[in-house]
Image 1 (cartoon, each protein chain N blue to C red):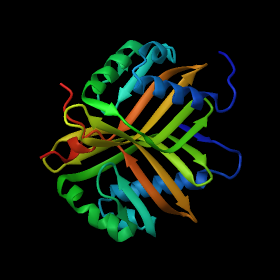
Image 2 (image 1 turned 30 degrees about the horizontal axis):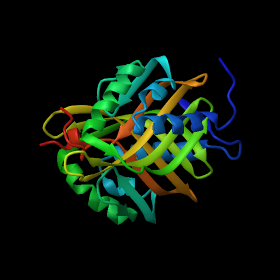
Image 3 (image 1 turned 60 degrees about the vertical axis):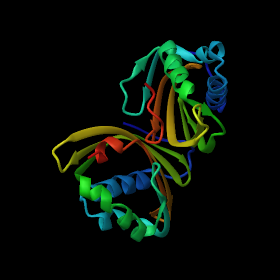
Length: 128
Length: 133
């Protein structure tokens, strides 16, 4: 496992989120372990970076990310936590949608191996 | 359970114990017990619901919840003290509704503590299934 400097994991999460919101999927995939565990709220967990990418791409067909209001971001060892209001507009009509959210990332070396998202998605339109 | 400090200053056990006791008080289903852990000007955010302030606001905002849910059980999985005054708590919460339905929902809270009481609690989860008719 490679050594990482303090703050480096936090910076990697920020870069990964930027790649996701830009839907730059080639860059996005590089941040994850092949064994990624991705759990979005109470949904069944997904496994692997491609499954995570597919889920986000599906969400972004309905919602366009705007500015996320980050309330806190912390790095503790191999864990990074982000507390925020994630903001979107609906692709159909431009209605604003706020998703209060806390994300917990666990790293293995320099790669994210677990991503748990705790959102209130109650105001998100149905995805399928 | 993962219980960690982000910095070496202070002993987090006091804050962790306060949070455990707060959730136990919540499980009493008497909101005044839960609300007694909060400062008078505390902020309470439950996901997308309107913000509530202080013990009175917390009690008032709990009334609709109590009509739907008869029991709550918090299963804390991880706690991290991320700064001098802030703890993040990752858990699963079991809700037993009055209609007999039992649901387990993932949840992550941020708790900001000042002087042995809660100054801010923000609850991140989608509780919609527990409140469904």
